[in-house]
Amino acid sequence: MTHSIFIDGAEGTTGLNILDRLEGRPELDLIRLANDKRKDPKARREALNDASVAILCLPDDASRTAVSMIDNKTTRVIDASTAHRISKEWTYGFPEMTSEQADKISGAARVTNPGCYPTGAIALVRPIVETGIVPVDFPVTINAVSGYSGGGKSLIARMENPDAKNSIDSAWFGYGLGLAHKHTPEIQKYSALKHPPVFSPSVARFRQGMIVQVPLQLWSLPALQSTADITKIMQAWYQGCSFVSVVDKAETTDRIAFLDAEELNDTNELRIFVFSNEETKQVILAAQLDNLGKGASGQAVQCLNLMLGLEEKAGLD
Image 1 (cartoon, rainbow, N blue to C red):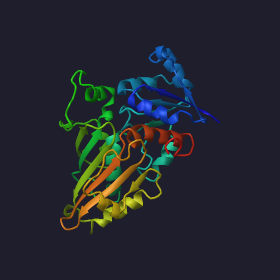
Image 2: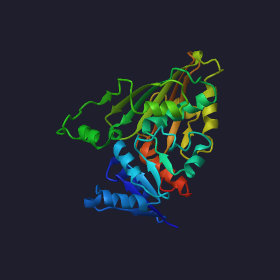
Image 3: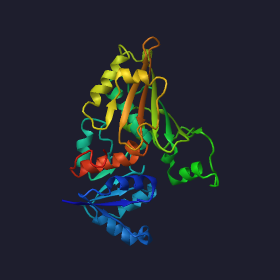
Image 4: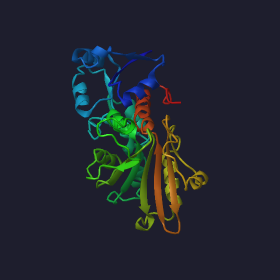
């Protein structure tokens, strides 16, 4: 049995990466529009309604419009934009978030693909909140750095082309300092936090890759007896997961001096590190991932596989 797939916005950074992971798979029939039809409403409507699954790689408003163009009950949707991230009518597409999430995605008609920063942040925070180690009203802080591809074509051009309008020659820059980043509501909701976390994102001069960090003062968390407890909680939470793993103590020790944001590029992996100092009772939780892989395109393909009842790792090895 073949499944028809239409990527609306296949020319963008996320769309191109999804397409690369889907091409050559005999169980999938890719619906393609000619260049002169890509923005034609009639052609898009037909493609959207012919697809078993439509994958939307569009700006928020365009994604909402695309969903409104689907007038049948059979086309299922994966939306990579932020348009539906906290909607009750959509299923959140982070399969490892809880033990039930993959099954929810499998049966969903509408799946909202997570953002790259939220994937790392939620992977770190949800287990320690859900198990009661961190109270729901805890003042969580999240620091993160991403490759510049996370900003799409416009930021890529500004970073790579010195002649581009508003070109950027900095090695690193922070942003979102108004503390109203569009990913914050998503992180808060799916981390099960009562209050918005302080989220401090940044971009560095590498194309793809990501590190997300959550610092913790363990003296403020009476439910913890030792820093080792967090590692045990994380390992139990992600036991048996195909793409999310918790790094053991020996390797974590080896990475204290250097944790590479680009190490997992071109994979759908997410690795969790628990860096700790037993004397000072301090911990830094760190998530390492590819912002274009598990943070975007890879995760969308993983969700697609689940929705179609296919091998979860198909196209992701």
